Image (spheres, one colour):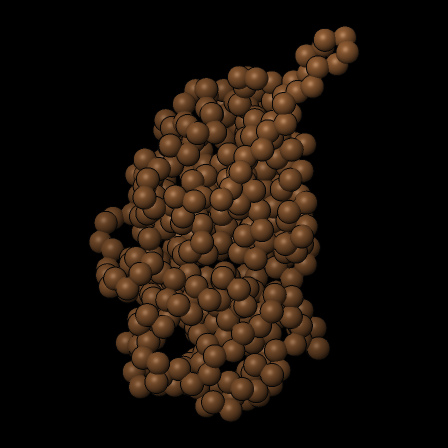
Length: 433
């Protein structure tokens, strides 16, 4: 049972009324919406700017801010400028708790947007819901965000890991019939959700090794030893980028030639190329690192960053070049801008005088359009994000999509093709109210 405690204001001896310190109102004067002024809307976020998940993910909030800058230069949302106040949590749950409390109680943000990481954000999700703070588009595919009954203010964004596991597992079952399979997954909800999806579609007899690693691990020799000894033909990894890079180097060390299939959080070619270059003792180049991941299988819920013919890629690259030119056009950067775009749609729909509840209601209406390869699952009964993804293979510095986009549920339902045509980016690059 969650309790919302509000400490009423105390009158001084001089009978001066002090504004209520109720955390649920974010410390704002009575009747106002926290984080919303006549000229600005301020939202907060936590991200691993340092630590084991920093490679790749440190670009995520910068990409969000870049798209906000673009919107602000074109008039903002109902005349209000968007402010993104994000803080470093180093992928450390205790730091996540500290920075999110600061954002809510001191910085007085309207909402938390794109909090990154399953082990980190899971430590603040109950707090945010108890304080009635919109917890929008968590940058993690944990199934745990989709609990509208107990977590009414929280919404996912990327395809959840159960759905992804089913899609990856279905592909492996079809493309590698009869082959031996090993799992390599991060401990906690991230890896557990992915494995749950895999086990929904893969025969238990085909899985010959199940290995996990701890976030921040710097040595996976025991896990790779077990996988090598199992003689697996395919390794399916639910891992962040740093762990994927370690796994690939461990394969080389062991002479292991198993096909590598990697969940989208750990498969960005730009990030992996740099990591593999930095991890080699010879101090290799990004090009040498990139050569090590050619043919790696993954999936995507957004179009590949290298598809310059796609209107969304063209839009986000224009925004990046103008407002964050130091960023690469990576999968991570595209995801951040896609979240920012979707937030703008939600804020527009929340009305000219948005409240915290009105933006929650706006997301629950569903029907958002954007760069996704599949549709969102948002509704009153579902706070999950994208409903599926598309298989892809690393080719050069990007991803080559394979087959059709696929959708499924987070239970035992089938994996089916998604046939609706993709949306086109609006001419001005900003959604219409």
